[in-house]
Length: 283
Ligand code: APR
Image (tube, rainbow, N blue to C red; front, side, top):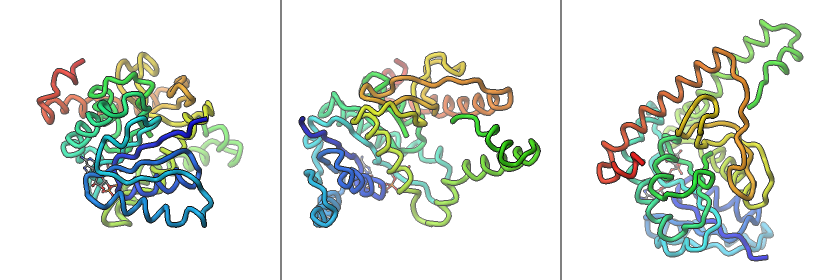
């Protein structure tokens, strides 16, 4: 069986961890692309130096040329600016949209059959942009839940305590990215986004039919039409093979609608940031 090929666009913090995880898990041959000369070559050489110690056998290549991503089964995009303390993910829209449109052109030209996984903020807008520019089918462009209340009630024995714990957990989860940004001082989380993307790549390459939270194109699910939103999906060899729709209570539906409205607001801004792509973005 031919070995899979995984290309990583963006050789920064997340790109480097992704390359190492791909190698350690022997997911396939790996190409690391970046616009900075020497950076991807240096990182790949660094990882390759310990192939014998780590016991992996895959080809690793660092490059500044899109031609090297030809024949990729999976492309994972991490090119873009990370958050600095005090910034929200949405503050990155202008700069990351320009980078994402360039990267998407490169993928469209050199890796037209690949599945694309995106780690760039603001996530939902970046996935939408990539799908529009590449024109790839929605199930091939993914990004990186189910009720816990019952389990908490069982654990704490009463609903009030369970609700208190739940609220604290939700708040901490919502703010976790910002917490890491604040602690690092100069950059955003990279181990956890890299692991999530590798989980997705592995589910596709090994046809695991695994349920993972994915930013997927909704066509009526959860009352949303034609927007990318994070929902639980089944990932397998065909990419997004199913969306797990489940009932939301009124409060959950209101929070979900609020989040979708924010995504719509960002997507509506894209034609102003990328006027050359206004027609593509409308389609
Ligand atoms: N094409 C390819 N690579 C690019 C481009 C481009 N047009 N522009 C920037 N890059 C590269 C940078 O050279 C850098 O090596 O993207 C890399 C980003 O790496 P880091 O700055 O270390 O950022 P990282 O922490 O890896 O985060 C990457 O994830 O959390 C999101 O918003 C964040 O979009 C960012 C992404």
